[in-house]
Length: 141
Image (cartoon, rainbow, N blue to C red; front, side):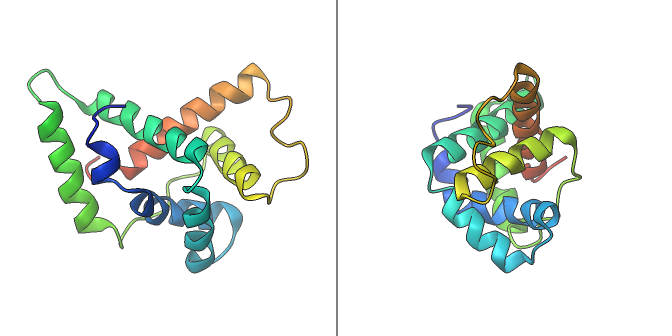
């Protein structure tokens, strides 16, 4: 985790709100339905841990030599509050699709056994997708 403050700055409800536009686009559903599904999904520790890990990876990537951890987290906090209702969907990529599959598995919308037998390549795509989700959640890009 980039900072112990991160789950307090970007709460699970914030995660649900921030990822809902991307999920809505990938699942071809309206925002309200996507937001409801994401609220259910982020109650899972597994899902929220993956999303926080992706956000942390994006923050580590953004942290410069002179930027303090606290300053970056403060910037995220201000940005999330400012744009939480104006988030745009991230561009769908194969890696981001792997994250959407994981969300569907967690929600019970994926076919039986979709998560079983994930290859190393699929797990790598998922890790890249979690990082892309993290980048898309940053209020500054």
